[in-house]
Image (tube, rainbow, N blue to C red; front, side, top):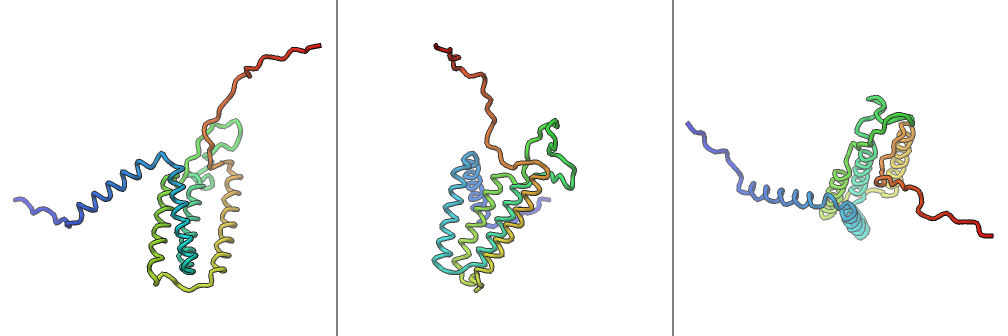
Length: 185
């Protein structure tokens, strides 16, 4: 006996097509990191201008700042924490080089950041998210939180000798091609 086919919502096919199209564009944008980050800066500028123009939504901005600070920490920390799981990163010059593997990869960091800013921008269109707060206190608290968190992260980076950024492949040069100058007397 055959069972009836499971019920599918009529819009599920449209949703699937939209998800596939979105994934296609995300895949195409993956190698273009500079343009992706410029898009994030542009969306962040639009959000900032909207908040400045409306003179409100400071609690949304504070939440956005805390969330993106958390993402930044995930981006800066190694996947394997040397404090809890032993020193994976080399601590001496004669140890083997191990590449830095992030807990949160760059693409996922960018994607989560841009999603959060777009959601924050959409939240500014609804007045019930505009909770009246004294924004200088939120700003001061966020700055203190940022400084304390980054100080702790930098101490961790110094203690375990890792740098979460690479500036491309090292290029080694051979002997110079200049001819030796002769003394002329």
